[in-house]
Image (tube, rainbow, N blue to C red; front, side, top):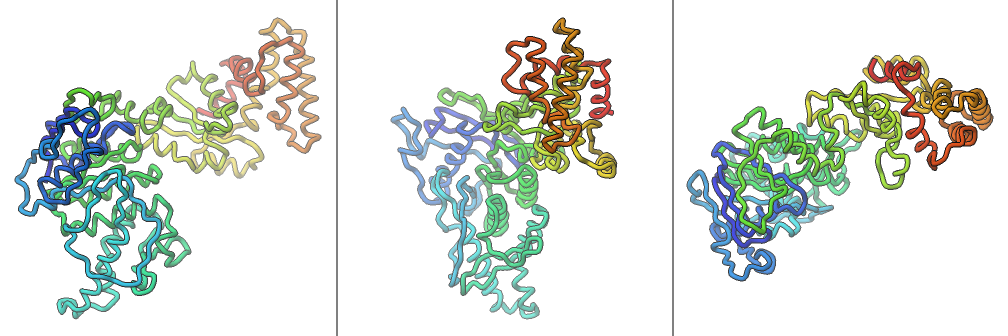
Length: 531
């Protein structure tokens, strides 16, 4: 089954919405837009249609489903859907919908019961309701194994083969999504039975010990694979499949879900995650007729609105990423991104957040306007891209080069050689402050303030500050430790007013503009970063 057109009137967020021009070739439909834009409401409308036309319960609740201000609404008329194919004889499998509230933190069973017809099982009536499926799917897998023992067609199978037959597809699927998480078995279903996993050196730890992201991805894979044999001509809808997952896992999960969807079925997802959108864009590039996007952003659903598949132009792509990344969307697709040290932007360190990156941006803005810089943490965070910012940006824009730049600090020559061999950049001097407070730059500061005569006094104050810092146990080249005293001396000697309440503010306002082409400090830093 594949949707052709949808008409919704007086339903939840929608006054009068029509969705048209959905191609019969679309296997994946991606709903994009910010929270509260109406994506989940669309899935709720599908659920109401299924209740009316496919006898899948009756979810209709006027207080929940009827748009505020609408007094004349009928569940039989609120949602109309046309399909590219005739409805299947068994209409109960037309839609299979998962809500975004898929949280089953733990479960264990001590007995197994024969499950009923899976298509008769209770369905989540609203997309705002909790959607618990893991324990139910566990029961179905165990029962299938038990039933297999008494099927003479399995007489030539040993117990291990029979048991693994039921979970083999799930194990294979998990192997493509997770690097080191393996479904090892179903445990003992008559005594605290639950899914068991291997991870690293840990063996057979319980489902309850998985992280939120691991549980979320496992839930969706498990549920889809268990349901495939019963929903083989179906429109699958998953509200925010990316919940609790990091970017790379999001991409792998969507790739795997897309892999499993039957050829005559369709997958609809709502998302505003980088990983999901990037993977969908990649799938669309590979198979342009198979993937479409519906954009819910900046739509006024208090009026009549018509939605059709949109092309993910550069402008629209940046807008979509603005939802996922906030201010980071402005970084998309420069020719080069340099990941450097420094505190990332957080409320607790707002005064000094991204200090290194701010310096680099201003220093190289004229000569390298195509480059941008992001502070991502300490040296280890930069080298390993712990926040996965570099990976996410390269996923979004394949043409963007990502450079990792670390401070010199106390690295040995051998460590520096190894880092550079692996493609990392290392500063020649200890840290960015070494360039900013270089003697040459301090002399330029005095010249700029018409206080050339004060240059030697300022350099003497710097030497004194460095000596005092060393006496406190700091390395001899640790300019950062001495910077507060150098700042105080400059303020006094040069009669500076409004020079900043912090060293960082002083450096950004007074020193960074002096680090210009032609100075030795600039040329050395340029070579360190771009050489």
